[in-house]
Image (tube, rainbow, N blue to C red; front, side):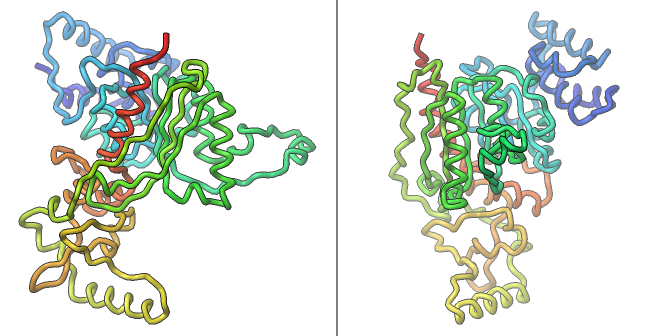
Length: 396
């Protein structure tokens, strides 16, 4: 029996100049066997790839048993393939794996998120997507991306022509991370995509930002569906996000009949996800608790709405954010006879719908950042179910 972690230890020293990407390559190779990723590097990884290739052949012949010592390996008999861009800690990936998909490429730049991603999925995401040539990304059925929103700057087409610059989607989104999604979609032509972003994307720059995104995707030949959805129907947290789904018109002719999921009639409460005996370290100190009360009182006197959020245990919470690590003020859990406390990292994971076997290998502060930046997994899974329904019934 060969454990995945043992194989990883064998490839800890890499012969190529880019150890970050070669490690990611090796883990992809080890999971999937020879694929299009073989062409990612102009030079193979020598004896490491040779040994792994031999091990894969032995495993397929039943002479070697691989034990996946990770909680969320891909499905053995996948129904479709996807890539996971701006992957974070893999919340979107987890949802699409639950619906029969296999991830064949992932990308994430944050080193701490990559640690969590590897611990749970057994692979190190490739690094900065802006530096990866789209032709080296493997063909896939679905592109997934929870991309950050950056300001868009639009100049007049006439001025661009005068300066000899490109216009249309190649220029209007240049310099933004959305451009990297657009160039990959343009080159790889997946059957469908799903993008996730903050609710305010719709209103950013008086709607012009979203108009560019929508028109770009439409110009690329995809019928586009979008809606702001609230995670409160899946977890006890008010969390609104815009979801953008598109289908390749060359395949579906604009007749895919996609529908966003109807929210379930759940009556959720924060009480359901709390740990029974949280560590006392999560209770606010007297100094911090007094500061938060004084801060709230000061802004209330000015007519502002700033302040801490003391949660009703029988209700839902505010939106957890990446800043939660600072003081936990947006979601405080009341405690009888003592100061309120912040959520534990495990409770933060549950608040986003991550299962309890999801490994948290980083510090508390990093965990708060990661879950605050992540997605409501069961909501993503409900969307995936609707999207995948179209993929399964692809017109012939």
